Length: 428
Image 1 (cartoon, rainbow, N blue to C red):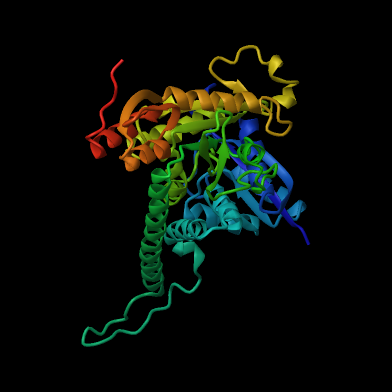
Image 2: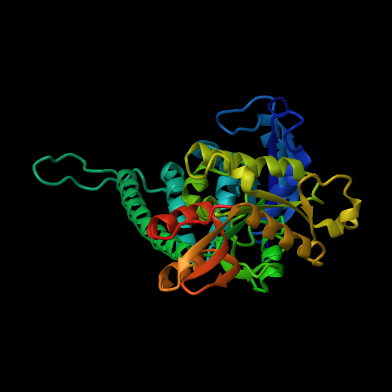
């Protein structure tokens, strides 16, 4: 039997200016989140808050009228698109007679259903436990029981809530150690890729912007892509060939969302590590969405926060390409008045993808230096290093040396000249 759900958006009009997404768009997003975990939404509403009540968040009249609607519609789960305190959550459940979850709990449920890899499942469990630790008063009904004392201390012993909190704390410590091991393993993989090396291009963007569809279109892969929020959570990587013949690694990452719960910002930090390491960042936008500009702000807000925490370079935007996706819903790229530095595509129809690939190729080239080396024919290691780490544009050999004209990244050029000091660049 389908689970009947309701979505309520408490809206503080005074706290939102015209630059923030409209209440209707925020409610629509919340309904999409709730529907993605299998709820059948039969009731949705925006409730204007004059003041936040510590007991229920909502006003007394709003609680009373909502109780009538919940009972009439036989609601099983009520989603409140806001952060609820444990007491508020408990009081609303008592008032409505149904399960109540807040925005954080909803997103955690979605992440729990979507995560597929070892890292993803560890991150989800960690976020759940950190969320639950602050809500033990609500989650348990046996907290009044106590365990007996021990040794010479005597006394009533530790309460059940203290034991549960301690057990959760121990599990969190173990999970963080496991996650650190997973991250170290992926770090080793990343170092191995640098030695290959293939440049990394990372896809970022608001959830449901079409990143996975674009990833599939460019790589020919079959990454799960569906018209729903958070269809994929775990970073996926594939090698592709650009028009110039240069090989790159394309990385699909977790989607961004507004007001991401703090538990998830910390727990899912590792899913964005590929962005920090990327040579180029493709910011994929759903240009057909009415809230596209606000979604862009949300993405930039997260990346700016990463820069403040030294997780990504402060100039990350200098290596970003803005990709305006879903132009087929607007009638094609020609319908967009002004693109600026952005490129318009449709990942679904393939429109604009050749131009996007060429743009990635050009930006890769601009980030590289062209230099000519005179390498002794006897020094096969130096020649092999240039072929492996750069793009050899031309080579002519004489009796003793190979004159190699190569396009190479600045950091790789520095590494080459440090490793092979006997080889000097030919100055123009």
